[in-house]
Length: 500
Ligand SMILES: Cc1cc2nc3c(=O)[nH]c(=O)nc-3n(C[C@H](O)[C@H](O)[C@H](O)COP(=O)(O)OP(=O)(O)OC[C@H]3O[C@@H](n4cnc5c(N)ncnc54)[C@H](O)[C@@H]3O)c2cc1C
Image (cartoon, rainbow, N blue to C red; front, side):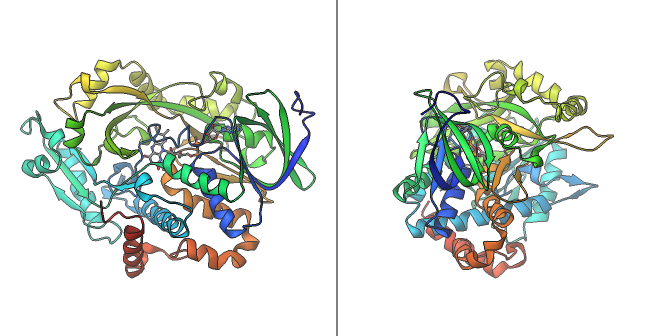
């Protein structure tokens, strides 16, 4: 053991090092374990348990994002509703459902009810402009087999029947409202899912080093030297790994830079924090069974779309409303106030400056959100729950998101991205994920892309196994209704959603 990161001795040699014990590392570890059971894996996590950052159930909204209700995935362009993004996300979520089903059949995942529950997904429109948009969105999706059982209504009685909590005290004469909905939606506890994966990984021989922060990644011949600090003893130790996955959430960018991965040159991170209002009052919880997504406020980033969610966590139902935007320079919820400052480098300074100049609307939105006190937050909640009583609700700090600022050539200086960006080096022996949205829901699809990019030469050899994990692999379900229906039935049954 060494008390200096430079002199830390190499104490272990592994095939795969996974940095971070969130849902991303959990998923990749499970895939590689099945594809190459003999490969040794080691997980490093700076906190003292799995899934304590963004993947923790109260740090994210737990929406199984499949674009059934999220209006930002169906933007209006030149008077037409563009459904391409919605189709893409839905397609990726079907991969998640298949992968999780396979892992249940395999005995890696053990309890579907602990991580996935069927909860109706509802889109909510207020005012005639939004109602008109929602009707056209519904028309664009209703006959598409990937959006089953979609319904639309601008009838007040139907609204009341479906959303009693949102109806009580609502003046239906003051503002027109409409909803579209489907029972096919899900609430996912990504924390419970990650834990089930890590329990199986440990049983299969993966060593998980909690309380270990990776402080450096350097090339050492054909391997990577991964240096970690034991946060409990202060000791440093190093491990040689053939392949490194940086699943470190908000800290991924910094670690990829440390490893000298050129593909992140010029990239920067923009932290956006958030707050929820949460209620566990059984009377309220009883009156609401849906994830209800509305339209984002003008200038608000897409992930700040307000929604009122039924959550199912540890077998208990609760309600979550938000997120309210916030700002903190930290890159992880349990990170440091110096994170943003430390991430500014000569190569990404222009990216930061460009975004600062271009994103005035976002800045204005964040400032207004930060200035909201509890009473103001309850006022916003009242658009959804008109009779909301402040005593029923408490503030909860959400997970931290680090939005990606991508470098752009002159005359532009960089652009803020709201998606997830997969980074890997040309040799394919290190990869990492930047960004947060749509995030956890599409993890298996992102990890398959990682396999294709980093282990391309093995994909033929792995083909049959991958097909077992994801039976529709290589087929566009949007173009194959029969296969979609088969996969839907298989996953509904295996994930035990039809019993919900
Ligand atoms: C407010 C909010 C709402 C969201 N809502 C949804 C939603 O409804 N649906 C959805 O699908 N997704 C949602 N997401 C996104 C989703 O939560 C994330 O995409 C996902 O959890 C990311 O998983 P991860 O494993 O990459 O990161 P994390 O879960 O953050 O895990 C990263 C881990 O790496 C560890 N780590 C960091 N640096 C180091 C280091 N140097 N050494 C060792 N360990 C390190 C951290 O401690 C952490 O445990 C939401 C996110 C937020 C913030």
